[in-house]
Length: 460
Ligand SMILES: Nc1ncnc2c1ncn2[C@@H]1O[C@H](COP(=O)(O)OP(=O)(O)OP(=O)(O)O)[C@@H](O)[C@H]1O
Ligand SMILES: [Mg+2]
Ligand SMILES: [Zn+2]
Image (tube, rainbow, N blue to C red; front, side):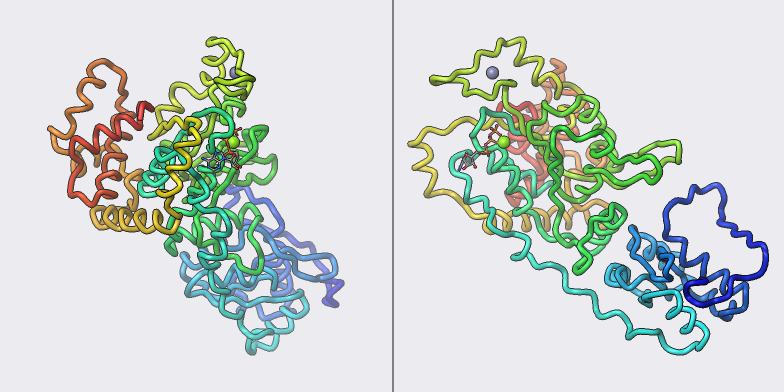
């Protein structure tokens, strides 16, 4: 304030931030506190302040600096309803302007803002330009295409089902068979995000501070592939003072890809169980606990053993069965229970590869089928909060969306012998619905249910 040439009030100042029960961190309150002091000191008319919301960090030179999390802050301001004008640092203006029905006033420094408040005229700068158009499909679908993958018809089909229903996938196979290649092409099959999802995804990236400032709106499903050395905090979120979202939340409404999955710390893998079940993660720290959305499609890729040598041929793998079992054992149990489809990718022979070349489909062709299937799902689920089959909760699967009794026949044996858990049963029903939607049928039949069972068991 002094550096902006305003007198510092000759008084003791008490600043109260309430509710006191909410932990408050970060620099985004700077501007509001400074403006409140200017108002209390009579430098700016205090009664004008009530109709605005102020966000931003104040530098010692009086300049405003951008802060993280502008989008969710402005979204919640808009939800409150009584304030419709938000003052933000210029560098945050494009992001703030993504929120409909809110007027954004970008300001450069404290002096510019205070003079404007004193004059009471139009905002200091022309209103923010229209938000830039969302990045178009062609820009974000660069060179990768499903047609790059030859052979692996099962893997490609699994990706299509995954994309159509929002399911989780495990790709198992020897090195160099195209597991990474396949997984990286899943986003090319997914449709653009609807506006409400795009805002959710953008808000999370805003809090994480990773939005591109020039075109902030994220309209494509994110693809997040953390390295296997990632810490639990990097995956589910964390931090000592300010809790930030992790990879699981950055992948919200998109794909979380764990390549070489057994190499991840077991604790990290297990921490994904909560979001896989509920669609959000809760991070608890001394500073408080924070819940972030985390509804992602999980794709795991794994080699059958730690040596990553071919299973046949000259340089063969010498890992003992015990070593192999221990290696994949890291993924076992409750985590794999939550994986809808387990697909083994094998090395294709040269002949298979040559033959397959004539059948490869481009991402565009497959994405069109995915879109049609998703439209069928959406019309069946209209009037519910769910848009993909993966989101349908268990009770609904056993009432409104339960397949006919004779279609469920393939499951009875597995249920009776205990190879199938109730969680597994639900996942199979969801995949069966997706296969139904891809086939353009009305209800799942034996064919869809048995295919879904095979995909769940991993014998496909
Ligand atoms: N089915 C395939 N179609 C086309 N190229 C392939 C295929 N499989 C492997 N390749 C080629 O081999 C390279 C390695 O493939 P990729 O990284 O996907 O294998 P991977 O199964 O993930 O192996 P690793 O287990 O070693 O990670 C690719 O960059 C690609 O050039
Ligand atoms: Mg790989
Ligand atoms: Zn081995």
